[in-house]
Length: 281
Length: 279
Ligand SMILES: Nc1ncnc2c1ncn2[C@@H]1O[C@H](COP(=O)(O)OP(=O)(O)OP(=O)(O)O)[C@@H](O)[C@H]1O
Ligand SMILES: Nc1ncnc2c1ncn2[C@@H]1O[C@H](COP(=O)(O)OP(=O)(O)O)[C@@H](O)[C@H]1O
Ligand SMILES: [Mg+2]
Ligand SMILES: [Mg+2]
Image (cartoon, rainbow over all chains, first blue to last red; front, side, top):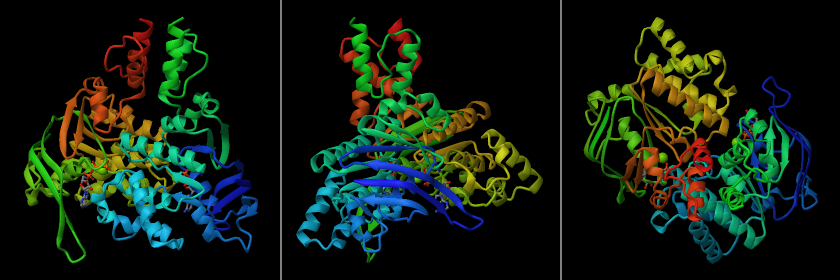
C-alpha cells in the first residue's frame, strides 16, 4: 500500500526558475486497485508518479510504502524501483541496449535473478506485449513508434513489480494494440493481484478498465472517484482541457431529449444495455 | 497534389559489422492519388508504413521502387528536395522536439528565414500563420510555457509560414490531452476549408477522422481500404481485422444492431445516432 501525505514538489526551488508542480497531494493507494490518472498537460501527472518509486524527492510531505517512509535513511530505494515499476511517458528514453531482448533483460538481470529465470521472464513479457520473435534481435531504435512503446512496457513487466505505474502507455499504439496491452495489464493485475496506476489521455480506455479515477488540475487532486462519479462532471472536465468518453455525451444528450436512461454511461457496453432496456419497455 | 505509383520502400537492417541482417519492405506497391484541397486521413496498425509514406512525401527517404510526385515534383530528383519540402510541410508527434527557438514568433520565423525570405515578408508570414492557428496572443511567449496542444499549433504555424500547399501530420495528437486534440483537429479543418491547404493526417484516434474527405487504411505496407469515413466505418469487422477500431458511436449502433435494432450502417455522429433512434 502506498500513502502520500501532503506531498508537494517544486522544480528548481529557491531559484528564479522555481516551478511548483504539486501542492499538498494526499492519496491512499490500497493494494490491488486499478487507478487511472487524468489531467491536462502540465497538471502534474508525471511529476506525481515519479514520486511513487522514489525517482524524485518531494520538497514537502511524506510518501509511505507499506508503512515505511521511502526517504528514510535505511530504506532501499533501489529495491523499491523493482517493486514499483515505472514505464515512462517517452519510451525512447527507456530503451538503450543494442537489441530488443537485451533491453527487456536489463531489469531482471539487475535484480540478480538466475539466467534461466531472466530469459523466461523476458520472453513472457515480450509475448504479453505482442512483440514477435522476428524483432528480438533488432535494435530498439529501428522500431516503429508503437513497437518501441511495447518493448519499454515489456522491460518493466519482466521485473514483475507489485505496483505497475504506466505513464501514457498507449499513446501511439494502434487500437488493437491499445486493447491488447490494456487487456494484458488487466489480466496480470488479476492474476498477480498487483496495483496498477495508469496515466492516460484516452478517456475511453480509462473508463473501461479502472476502478478509480484521480483527476489532476494545477498540481492538486480535483476529483477522485469511480469512472461514473468522475465523468458525470463532463462539463467541468471540458473546462480543464479534458473530456468524457463519447458515449457519456451521447447518453447525456439522450437524457436531455427526454429519453429515460437511469444515468449517463461511460462505456459502449453499458450504453448499449441502458438503451436496450429503455427501448424494450 | 500527391501521386504515388507502385511506390515501395525497403529499410536495410545491418548488424554491428555492417552486414545486411534483414530487409524490411515497409511500403509494398502503394498507388495513391491525393488531390489539391483534400483532407485525407491515414490509419494503420503499428509498423504498417504510415510514417514511411510521410517521410517519402517529405523527401526524407528516397523510393526503393516506383515513383512519387509531390506538387508535380519527383521526390527522387535530388535537386528538387527543398522544393518538395516547401510544398509539403511535416508536423511530428512530439511537440517538444519540434520547437527550435526561445520565442514563439522566432520559432515560426525559422522556416521562412531558412528559405531566404526577405525580413518584411517574414514578419507578415509569421503574423498570418499565428493568426491562422489562433496563437497570435502568444507571439512573445516562450514555447516552454505552452500546453501540448498550443505547441503543436505553433509547429503547424511554423510550417504555414513556409506557404506549403500540403501539410503532412504524423500523429500530431498522440501526446495531447483531449482539449489539445480538439484544438489541433479544429485548426486543421479550418486551414483546409479557408486556406485550401491539402491535409494528410496520420492518427490512431478513430474519432479524429470522421470529418475527413477520405480515409486510407494501410496494412503491412499496402493500402487495403479506401473511402469516405462512412464507407470505411460501416465495415466494422473489416476495419477491426486490420487492427483498427470504429468511433464509439458507430460501435454502439453496431452493438445495438446485433440486439435487433436497425441503425443504418456507419452512423458516425451523436446527432445521427439520436435522429436514427428517435426517428
Ligand atoms: N529506421 C528503420 N530501420 C529499419 N526498419 C525500420 C526503420 N523505421 C521503420 N522500420 C520498420 O518499417 C516498418 C514500417 O514502419 P513505420 O515507421 O512506417 O510504421 P508506422 O505505420 O508509422 O507505425 P506506428 O503506428 O507504430 O508509428 C516497420 O516494420 C518498422 O519496424
Ligand atoms: N524537468 C522539469 N523542470 C521544470 N519544470 C518541470 C519539469 N517537468 C515538469 N515541469 C513542470 O511541472 C508541471 C507539471 O508537469 P508534469 O508533471 O510533466 O505534468 P503532466 O505529466 O500532467 O503533463 C508543469 O508546469 C511542467 O511545466
Ligand atoms: Mg506527463
Ligand atoms: Mg509512425
